[in-house]
Length: 186
Image 1 (cartoon, rainbow, N blue to C red):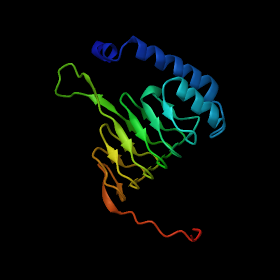
Image 2 (cartoon, helix red, strand yellow; image 1 turned 30 degrees about the vertical axis):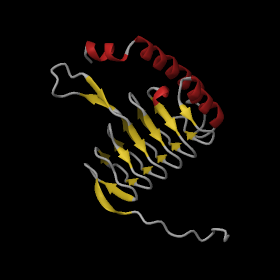
Image 3 (cartoon, rainbow, N blue to C red; image 1 turned 120 degrees about the vertical axis):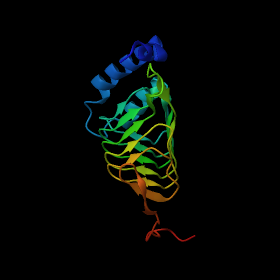
Image 4 (cartoon, rainbow, N blue to C red; image 1 turned 60 degrees about the vertical axis):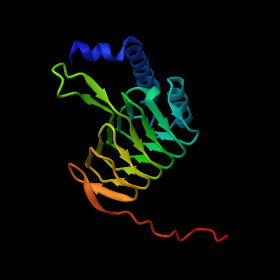
């Protein structure tokens, strides 16, 4: 790591990350899977995250900087995920980040001799799904209802209601929802 990397984020940023990491590691991480939902939401809020009442964050999730996390509605961050949110990550209502997935909002400017840190936000629209072990890069928007297949690597926006897979991710097909057998007639 270069000296410029350390100076770009500032001391306060590093101290907050350190304190959050220790508290999460000691008090939330040991909890079995999805136990302690309210406590984890409270802890995230205490460190600046904007999380709704019904979100689910698994204990083994690694969240870099809570202040840059927005979770709406009934969204989920699954087990063993990495949320590297140097920039804002927004996970909208009903969106799911499955086990082992990695959301990464930062990189380094490879055209800069000093490799300065660069970042751009990630948005997961309503009902989107980032499947197991997938990678979503900086500046990407996953459209409403879209699916990023297992182990996919996404570096460009994904259109709504499409399924992508591979590295780099390519469109596999449109996502079409079946009608529910159990909907109540009005």
